Length: 491
Image (cartoon, rainbow, N blue to C red; front, side, top):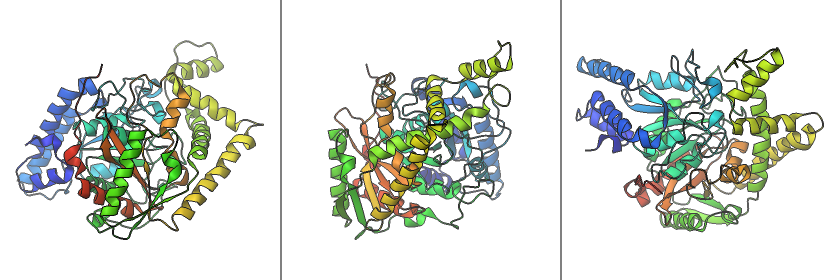
């Protein structure tokens, strides 16, 4: 038995039957990290010694007959944008290189309440700005399927760690596709919940009206289990919505006969790789076999959404990152002769090129004379995108699209062309603009053996339906048995 290949629900069964101890599980993941991390580079900060100490204490509780959570002792990885008390929280930036979080984010409080064990903080694009995890100050994470390829971004460290079996599941954040896109190119499950379902308190902000904490897992059942843990109203987050208690595992295994799936033709046109398109069309046929009603329709929002997303997100980033000035927060330059130089030098040294690019763009669209032409117009288009989704959901239960227009590209391939890099998000950004839930699940491999992801989009706060539909496909195709990373070295 290879412990690190098991899903969380399989680990739970092994713990319940006493086939495994928590120490054995943590030791297995510790060994796996020591073996694979030098090549994958998914972690910024490791917590392996602390993890083993916690595991030993939990095993003693079990031996003493004490009551513990059903998820107690299950390892987890945390994207390094989520505040973790007493642990370095860097946002993969020199600006926060030495920041030790003085409190836990709400999602971390929930993880700790379940007595899960964090194995460490995971790499990402700096301040979550990127689609490839090449914009980290610390390291460039590799894709476990091919070490010469990117793992997606900005939550690339989280996706790569799960795909490489270094953690059984992980938390990430999704501002414009930063969970779903890396999940797609790493061949795992990634869920971005409805905006407001999961608290953002203690999550370092990139674009406050778009950011959402979500999950990376090996299968859909684990996805539902972890969503149960992190979802829920939080009075410390004014954007948090109270939708009552839900158990997302209850929708697993439910029949989808007669369920209506809409396939927007615009998401399958120019710019979508032919192998990606064919895999999605094959997935559509699988859904038809199990009784879903699938229909093509028009949803002409992709290009509008991409421009709208980058205007709104950069504007909000410009505002949110203003606090990092060398005085209130973050890196402080050593060489300066006046206050203006302190600000300038601290920010110049602390931020990477991509973050600077987005701050400049955001400041521009918010500036006098351009606000109405860009930012105000983008907000109007945002409403238009939401309305178009609302119209579509009057007819369809779920919308099915590619997650990413291509499979994983080579490291460095798009680094010199920001516009080409931004196009990586063309299939995902509209979901964030409208505040909808979206899940990415594997649906095939391309001719190079790289994973292809399928995105299922649902109505606001209707995570149950997309989880049910994703699980139905998983059962029909048994993708967990087919998709295993090869760790190909690349050339």
